[in-house]
Length: 476
Image 1 (cartoon, rainbow, N blue to C red):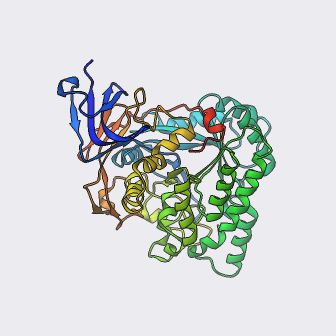
Image 2: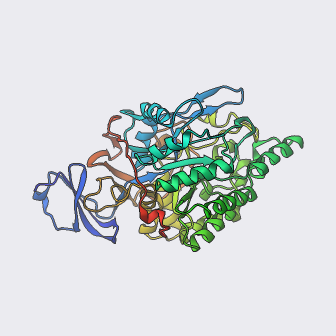
């Protein structure tokens, strides 16, 4: 057999560890991973020697919002940038798969919501993608059999909010009776519940309090979306989950030490509970709201204190935190900073492109994490938890040939002009200690030497199924 492509390096991150390897690609799949030098130049149409560079699975971002509704202070709503923009930037940054959301709202079926969402993505994204299904508000009885159907047919993750987030978004929260009913449906269908966990009573009380006191500036967001709120919500969700055999929980955007501790305690009991944090929370604190255009650093829940950030980092070490996502919302600096108040600040961030390299710089470069630990946090764990492994997130024979090559000799200070999304970056001014020099999507070289070689029709939808290993409480 003549392979299509062989990538070779002395640092290849495989499920068995880091080694000097040849990664042989045939069509869309990895055909073989063998000791470096196992194949000579005649074994493939092209051999690329990446010695000195890091070959790893393509990054997986399990939490993005593309072509997403964005409320404005004047009451109007627009859509953020779509997959045709963010997908390209993702590949530049070494991320080959993103998971977005289908938003179910009243007046339609879940399947109708899914069909509508596919229209936003089909032939309109350069990288691969999948969807969580988001339900909100008071859930009608007819929705539960609909959820059973989609859970068993490629959409195995259901997202719910335990808060309305802001006073203007009333109707977002799912009450705990309905959460209980969804838990039972998801457990029976072998799925996973994805939770935005904040205590609505506390959040809305604090909105009333700071507004009444005239402290309406966004710099007070950490008081409103506070750490205690996360503690109360996480523990209430976990208390409910203990009464539903077979339910598995994934807490999105964990932001506080209390959240990390709640997850750690649940996992110590063998419960199938997993935590995600965001690179915003790992890199910024509530003090950063005081900077010029401090809204740049915000997403919901709020940034927290330095002690919370320290706890998040500890969580990535002991696996209380399994993944690092972005909560991507791609909009202009004008849109991001238009809200000045605690109750109208735009959430989300422009972050898919720099995520992999930023986390390499901080984890491996500055904190001494192993390459395996870093890859787990930005790729492999998301694949395992979300039902994509080993098709994604692993350099192993039979997996999709989704590959990122990081160049650790490329050290630089990031400017927004180096990126491919919007007109600002919250990461501008950071020193990066690596950057991708090659990205491969299902065997196709889509970025090489700074040149984009992909196509907006390259991206493919990925139906998923949560493994029994994850639903059984596997410790990642």
